[in-house]
Length: 252
Image (tube, rainbow, N blue to C red):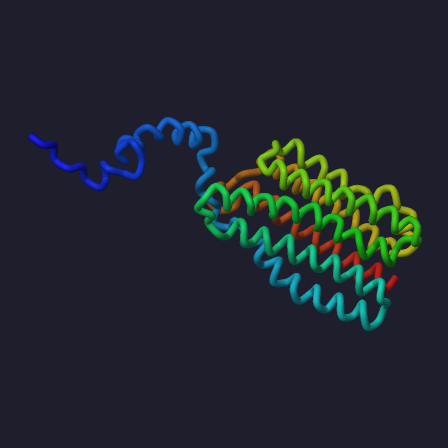
C-alpha cells in the first residue's frame, strides 16, 4: 500500500519534516533562552527615550544652527551643523533600531552596526563646535584630528566586528569622550566656568551610561525599564548638558 501523503506541517521546506526540524532546534533555543531569558523580549520603554530625544533635538538643533549662523560666525554655524547632524543621527538610528522588531539576524546585525557606530560619530560631533569656537586654532585642529580619527577607527571596528564583547567597545567610547581633559584650560578660558561644568557633568553621565550598558545593571524592571533604558536616559541627559554648554560657549 502507498503511504498517505505528508501533511503540510510535516513536509516543511527542508530535508526534515517541519515538526521534526522544530524539535531538533529546541535544545539550541532553550540554551539561548537560559543564557538570556529576556533576549527576545524588549522592555516596553525600549527606544522611546531616544525617540522623544530625537523630536526635541530637531527643534533645538534648528534654533542652535540658525542663531549661530546669524549672530556668531561661519565657523560656529559649521561646527553646530556637524554637531546637530550627529545628534540627530544618534537618536534617529537608536530609536529606529530599538523600536522596530527586526525579524532577520542580518537586519538586526546591520542596525546594531549603525547604532554603535553613531555613538563614535556623536562623540566627535559634540567636540566639533568647541574645537572651532572655544579653542586656539592649533589646539582645535589637533583635537578634531584626534576625535574624528578615533571615531572613524571606532566605526571600522563596529562594522568589521559587530558582535565584539562590550569590554572592547565601551573603553574606547569612554577614552574618546574624555579627550577634553587635555584641553581644560582652553575650554575654561574661552567657554567659561558654566560651560566647563556642564561638559564635565555630561561626561560623567556618559561614563555612567557606558557602565550601565557594559554591566547590564541596574535592571529593576526588565519588562518595562531595564538597564538599557538607564543607559539611554544617561545619554539623553548628557546630550542636554552638552547642548546647553555649546550655547554658553558660543556666547561666552
